[in-house]
Length: 35
Image: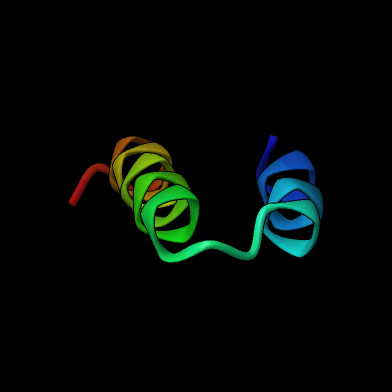
């Protein structure tokens, strides 16, 4: 899933998309590591 998000970041370079993708990545990472 994180690899796919990185792929999307390469495609969508506008700030709004990057911010949204970063937020999704943060939530997934928090759940993965139970932070």
